[in-house]
Length: 563
Image (cartoon, rainbow, N blue to C red; front, side, top):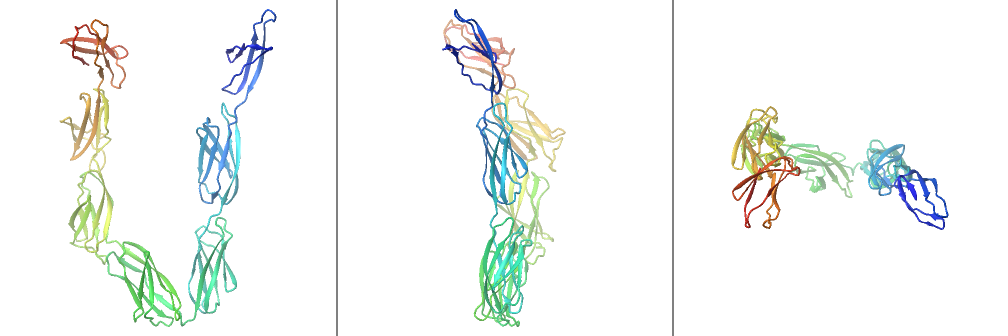
């Protein structure tokens, strides 16, 4: 017999050997006491041995995929699926905790990690069953691609040619421009690198831009063309920024002239605005113009001339600013308090739109109102609690302007109720005043089951109504200053019984069960039974059951239980 951890195990001796196979749930030192009771040939004997139970290998594995710089890094831990605990992952001198559940854990690392190759080590300290372990892996952080935006405007012979290369703000490499057999370099500064090229003869120059030596971005190349023209072929495009109000008649005008200032007629100007291209032909004054039927906002307008055999290409950029003619603010108000929506309207010239009919659309209904001397119109908000989009419409400029209107209920903290019959649970609401804060001393009317009740709010604005209705489902409605809120009330019975069938003379009893106010069996409660016109009182046992012997003649009876 083997005795291990206080438990006895019998084993049959075969060829002088007794074997016992046993699995241990915990690691550590285990002492085994073996005893032999003896027989006619061999005396009683015993011995003690020590077994060391080692912890299991957790099979810790750390996986990290390569990433592009500035991307989140994800470390994945895989272990034996019984393990729940924590693993620390050391990356670039910083430790990160990974919570492991059922042998799996993940951590997303958003710290900035520079380009390079890194080693990562995961460490598990072990637990009662599994030994400590480490796992190591490597991953690479690679550079990311960069776009080169090359801007090389045409230049007149003898002027300095300027090539701008637009990068990204954190670029720290350098560009080299190879043009006309020479190379020019420049460092990136705040996302732009610029090279200046002197003394280029007349002609069209194809050139290559190379970007290198950046700590974060891959090398890149781009190709473009620079035109050097004589003074006679140079054209001048002239346009000014436009600031206008929505619906105004202001136009964008562009003039085209030669290098001596003479207007150029009959040439096509391309105007790119808001993603749409428009072609216009210059008149005898070298002028083109375009209407600006744009929504409010700021627009960059690209104006370009493609050139021909006589004139060189040219391009400029101007801005168009379209300003609002309606000004309003989002509104949050308590149901039917004095807060209303106001909007200020301007005409196409930015002047107050006085005594003019304007429109509002809210909740699908249109309202007309007349502005005052300051161009202000008001719309009273008498909507039910909720969130709405209000759109104001300027009849002078046709602009539409939207705001969000939030109407707050005059009630808060109201909830559906599930309660046991006549327990202490009450229906509670909190009343909100015109300023949005709880208010005391206000009368609230409740309607439940067709009966109306009035209650006064306390110092915290709460109003309570006792619910003493029979078991069933009800809808309760609270009303204050025209604002109503409804909830469901479910009253659960605390008295239960079931139909029964018994044989005459048998000992079967009718049983009714009583629950307390939280649904637990109620002992020592008196239940009144009425059967066949006779009343009986019985007391519930510890299980909440009251029993009544049935000694009636054969037949069908109605029994009523009352508590």
